[in-house]
Image (cartoon, rainbow, N blue to C red; front, side, top):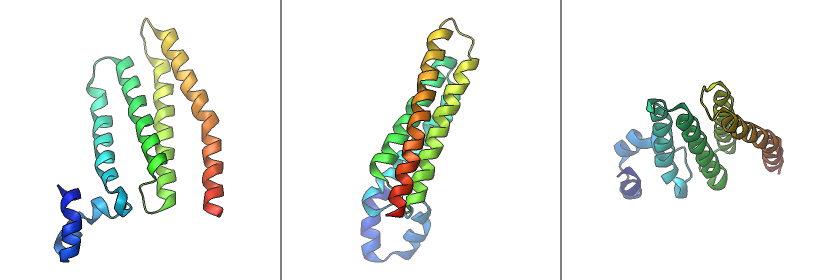
Length: 142
């Protein structure tokens, strides 16, 4: 609702509406306001993950949600401030690493395949992270 009404309220000059919704929309670029809704849904899904009884499903779901969030943040760069986009990506990478490390502590008959998957995610994240940091610094210096 807010995403559709926001442009009309701005044109009208409705200051009260802008003050009540600024925490939600003013962090994002005008053409990327939909990312606020995406991030709220992502955070809600992360909060729901512990309610599932199967620990393997929890880890896989957390990994999937974090990876999707990382891809969306890096692809669209929705925040007005570049460093906020970088920190958001770093938090997603940290969640990916934490989920991978947590999978080593799962007692399950498929422990070998789970640990191999976790190790692959750790290696992939560890190899991509320095490249992303270097790219971010170079982009910031330009």
